[in-house]
Image 1 (cartoon, rainbow, N blue to C red):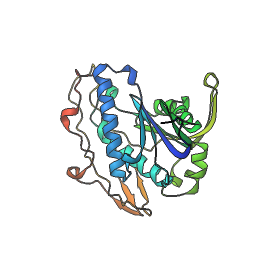
Image 2 (image 1 turned 90 degrees about the horizontal axis):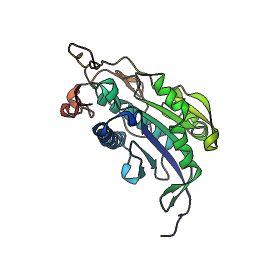
Image 3 (image 1 turned 45 degrees about the vertical axis):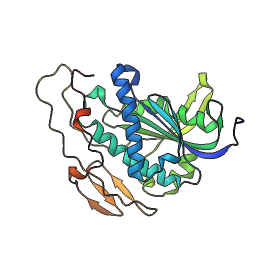
Amino acid sequence: MDYPTPAIRRMCLAVDAESYSHRGHRGQSEAQEWLVRIMDMVCDNAGLDRSCWDVQPQGDGELALLQPGIEEARVIAYFTHELAMALYHHNADLHEDARLRLRVAFDQGNVSLGANGYVGAAVVSVCRLRDSAPARRALRDNPDVDFALVVSDSIYSDVVGQGDYDLYSREFTPVEIDEEEKRFRARAWVHVPTTRPRSRSAQPGTTGESPVPSQRWAPQVLHGPHANVRYNYGTVTVNGVGHGTADSAHSPYDFPDFYRWGPNDR
């Protein structure tokens, strides 16, 4: 095959796990495994065909090029809804330093396939946005949230700002990213999901039993072009109709207990 291939406009998604290098060998292996599992589950529950994505694994993260012709507002809204719920349930019973917390970024632009990966300004940009100081600071300054979202200025103006789905109701903060050593400058928008205090397992060096985790719940989501879903980790509103906590037996994110780490397993 001749490289690079013709450039096609694609929406790009980049995710990366926080504090990956601080984990041991086992911790890094499990973080990678859970990242892939959660991405698969999120896309399945959001009605997104991940088999059509071009994915470039990056160890503790990934770069994904979504198929042309998608409804970008729907992808961002549904993906982030399901990601919030998946990470909440995955992290619910974990020790603080075992939680999986992600930086997530979206951008768009012409992308082509090179000899050793994908090439194009959007590929570089989406990874820079994901790894930027504002994205890292959003997680650091909000320790109870499980992910922070960064979108490019073009995604914000072309997609978020158009008011489709529930993106209009989310609070985005404009930031200026200037990484002189990487010759990258951009205006971007950061969103930190709303959250409520979660129950925490006992921290290293403490005594006593871990608190009992709160009841899990499953969203009643209407998939389709007219769905309007709003959440706050305990109440789901679909097309203006509120739903309370669902039976945990029906949750798509009931993770098996034997995957949980104990205090001596980190």
